[in-house]
Image (cartoon, rainbow, N blue to C red):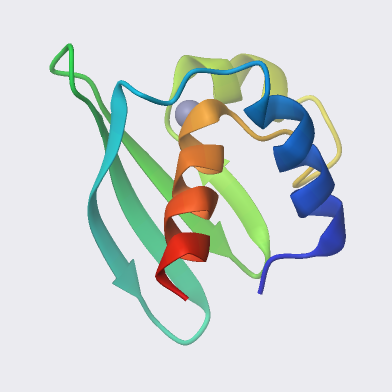
Length: 91
Ligand SMILES: [Zn+2]
């Protein structure tokens, strides 16, 4: 499900981002989509990450400001990366 291109992006961003304050609250998978709730452990913030037809989206302002102006699927905020790492670890 996770393409090579995404894996590369993860490796790059993983080294410069701290994920320790994030955890995966819930994962709902269907045939064509994955919906994930990502929470921050040091605040009440909650983000909704989705993977639909191989495209990641997130409800955070980082994704809103950076992701929507780029090629679809090319921007991954830390919530998306945390999700990918989490899902990858479950396989
Ligand atoms: Zn995000």
